[in-house]
Amino acid sequence: MSLFFTSLNSGSNGNCYYVGNDTEAILVDAGISCREIEKRMKRLGLLMERIKAVFVSHEHSDHIKGLEVLVKKYRLPVYITSATLRNGRLTFETELIKSFTAHEPLFIGGLAVTAFPKFHDASDPYSFIVSHKQTCVGVFTDIGTPCKHLIKYFKQCHAAFLEANYDEEMLEKGGYPIHLKNRIRGGKGHLSNRQALEVFVQHKPQFMSHLLLAHLSKNNNSPEVVQRLFQPHADKVKVIVASRYQESELFHIGNNKKEKRSSNSIKHTLQLTLAFN
Image (cartoon, rainbow, N blue to C red):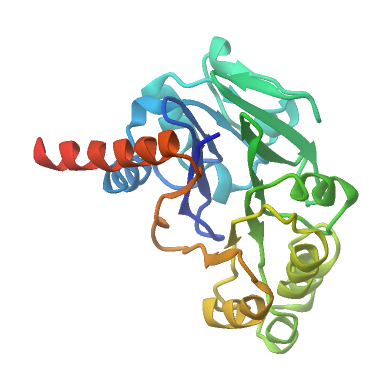
């Protein structure tokens, strides 16, 4: 029942999210360079060999920037729709390209990954949940509106990356041209802080332990603003703002002795990695 998860980067400058158990993991998106993914995972004590696949949400550059190099270097299966592949102008060896079907779990070792469609201004955008023995982590970014699919899967999550892209007043008063403001808030852009808070307050399950607020705008939001908004509603949930400049800490869901030993083994891996480098 143990899952580890971290944001390797979150924002319009690049998105990459890690979810895994003791033996295998997947990445959702690779919007930072392969070198940065390697460096950030090493700092967290995570082995590249644990990554068994990459799932791609959509073709915007902040989600695919490092994808081709990463997939080719490690010969990773890449789960991607044909429309995203085409519109992202991506090229991979045929045998590495894999497909997925909405709402049907795919099994990557002991991990079950389920995709669902979302509202965003991309060709064929999806979000994902990752489960292991009834423990679930969701990756919910680039969502124009909190649709019924988002709510359904958010209710299943012990932890979630949830977009809180912009503060509505900051966007309105900011220097973006009106067409860009309308694109962001127009139902196929991004979730505002208020929309994200409504999803959290109204639909968080009692067993949720972690919420990572993700994909914050550099110009129309700030970690302080969004933390201040969410904290009074956190209750027992640990609320963290995912950085656009560095990896988050490695979080762990698990509450029995065996799982605590597993968590310690991850830390031991980091100690060995540092000792031999």
